[in-house]
Length: 361
Image 1 (cartoon, rainbow, N blue to C red):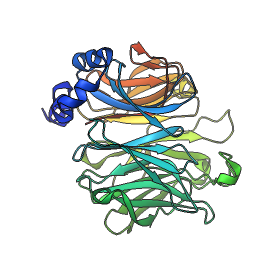
Image 2: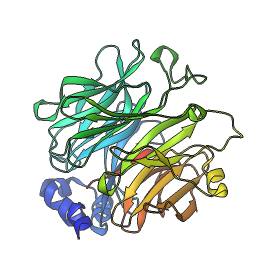
Image 3: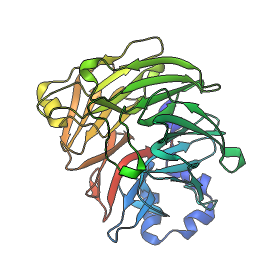
Image 4: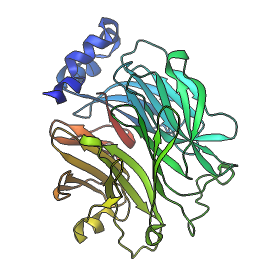
């Protein structure tokens, strides 16, 4: 099954890490690794207020940790080179490159002058390039920074993201296209995380040529949904692109929060039952696709919900209450879900997990 070949399971993880990695683990961490079938990574905040990046078993047991200079947000992982990058939460200016197998020291990247990271990035399929969402805050435009992973992650160029509030970015399976979620919200580090243009937001979804930055498609949201910030994206089979949104308009409105598109296709919003929409509280914090099972998962920390949808029909196949729901990623049972309260599926750790999980696959 292709799913298993894509998965770094416990045996593959140990082979890739080598004897030295396992020998350096404490007894509890080694036991967690030996008991698990899949390995994930997520940012966290420790009880003492420090921040880090952890490798985690599917049971939620922490295997290893890397300290970070401040809070992170999203991550990028290359199965080819086995490099993991954690990006600072907006308006942070650092990204940390790590080796989850413990074979290299972390590399700290800094955003160029006049830029900050938006918390997300993605590798090219061959692992040679890293694309990062960035804000040219004085120019009020989103950019995609390009970094050469084969040369110490040196920044070698950039593409215009054709929007503002450029949040999430990913790469198509064949590596030819960048998919960008422009949240449409103007910010400037002089004002911290304050949203400066809620009355005239410009959310959009953009497809660019990965080799030259050529604009392939831009989908601006219709005027009635101008306050619907397009935040996160996940890829499905057959070039399907799923996106998730956060509403910045009147609290009594109930806009659509999840949808999909493809190259040459218009945006299609997925209608959800009224009670499910109410449960998401106008805010989807993370989205993931389980291709094996053909389902899409979303979480809402504000609503305390995790919801799974049939990727073909859009029908709700599961809804569960998760207080302060945070990250979501594919698992052998559908989706692994974390929370700001330290839960990771059925386990609980003395940390606050951050908003995203990446499966090391």
